[in-house]
Length: 109
Length: 112
Image (cartoon, rainbow over all chains, first blue to last red):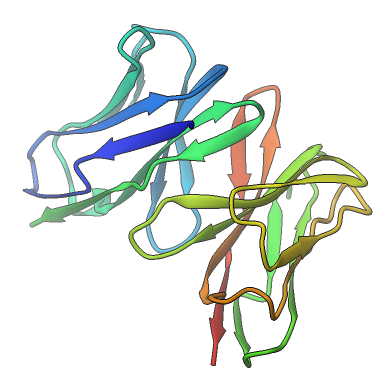
């Protein structure tokens, strides 16, 4: 059975800290891995990763994929209170997205 | 302005009633999806459609039905057979060129 597991389930840090969120997967026919940020409503797209070892970067956020070890990490440096959200990881397999349960990130001022 | 719209934003239903959630997109995407989200859980796939007049069950299709008569529209009906329908429902479509899934704003359904 295909599955995507995120860890930790929740994380509380102080503003300015760096955080690393993890996403591991076991799927047939891997096509891509996606990261989303969800605040109160619909998820918003962050990154799509298809190749191992190539870092995607957007401002203070970055992500990398390891297709040999079947995981991805999402890094956020110099965290701000606006980074507080649920971060969702999804893997595309057989034209469907398989979602992790998410990591709830709380940034304290 | 391209995007996905869902209506209504909030919906209250009495037990035993069927309700239909609307999802419309003008992104010219072939594939559309319905997800359910419960607190503390990831998105769970209800139904998806790769093309007009065709759709497949996802992981939790029981108690739901869909139709795909037009490319732009993928309505979801929550039937009285769905035992625990209170949840946040998200509609999405996918851009196959970029593999990015676009989401609508969601409908929060509450059964009274």
